Amino acid sequence: MRSDGWDARWAAAMAAVAVPDGAEVSVGVLDPVSGVGVRHGDRAFVTASVVKVGILVALLLEAQDAGRALTGEERSYAAAMIERSDNDAASALWRSIGRSAGLDAAHARLGLTATEGGDGPRWGLTRTTVADQLLLLRQVFGAPADSRLPLASRACVRELMERVVPEQAWGVPVVADALPPGGAAWAVKNGWVPRDATGLWVVNSVGRVTVEGRDLLVAALSDGSPTMGRGVALVEAAARAAVSAFTGEARRCPEPGRRLTASGEADGARPGRRVEREGSRVRGRHPGTRGPGAPRRTAPDPAP
Image (cartoon, rainbow, N blue to C red; front, side, top):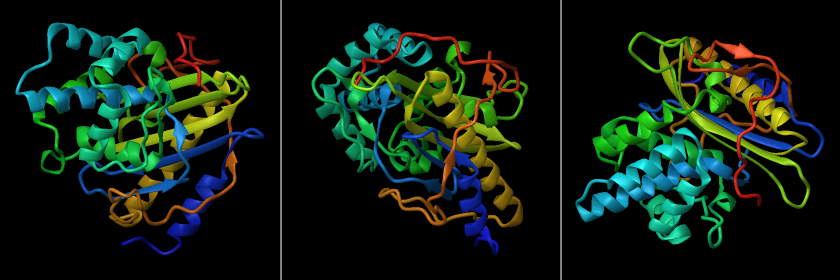
C-alpha cells in the first residue's frame, strides 16, 4: 500500500522537472521482481537506438525457436550494436529478424502492446512508450519465472548492456550506486538523434540501476530538445526525480504503486509540469564519476 500523500509527492517530483519550450519527456520506474512501478506520461516516442535491445531480444527468440545458439557473426553484431551502438550492426540484425514484422512479433510474445517497428530499413523510427520499455526490461532483469526468455538469453542482454562504452554511459546510470565489488551498478542502452525536419533532438535512456542496494528498472524518453546535451540533461533530471520519489516512498511503505501490467497501467502517475536541467554527465564505468558538459558525440541514429 502507498502512504498518505504519495500522489501529491509523485506529482510534485514530476512538476520539479520541466522541459524546454516544445519538448516533452516521459519517465517510469519499476521494481523488476515485485512488478511494482510508477510512470509519468503515456505518449509514444521515436526510439532511436533504444530499439536495439528489442532487436537483440527478437534475435534471441528466433534462435530459441530454431533450437540453436547465436552464430559467431550474430554475437559480433550484437556486441557492437549494444556496447558501441553501432548502426551498421543494428541494420544487419534488423534484416535478420525480418525488420518490423519480426520485432513486432517478438514484442507481442512478451506482452508489449504500444510499440510499433519502423518502416522498411529505418529501425530508428520504431515508436514506443515508457510502459512498454519497462516491460521489455523486466523480461531481461526480472525474476526468471516472470520471463519468457531463457537464462542464457537474459544473461546475454544483461552483460552487453553492462559493457556499454564509457562515452555512452549517460542517462539512467546517474542515479546508480557506486560500483559494487564484483558487480555492475547499472546496465543501459541509450538513443539519440536529431529530427530531419526540425533539427530538434530525440534523446532516450533505458536500463537497470542499483539504488541503495536495490535493483530498479528506469526508462526515460524525450523529444524536442534543442541540443543533444540538453536532451541528456532532461532524461537524467527526469530519472533522478522519478527514482528519488519512488525510493523515498519505498522507505515509507513497501508498495509505492500498483503492479505494472502488460497494458502499461500503473497507479500514482499524474501529469505535471516538466523541467529540463543542465547537469553533469556520467563518464566511465562508475556512475559517480562525472564530468562537465555534454557527452562526447558519437554517430547519431538514422534520422527520423
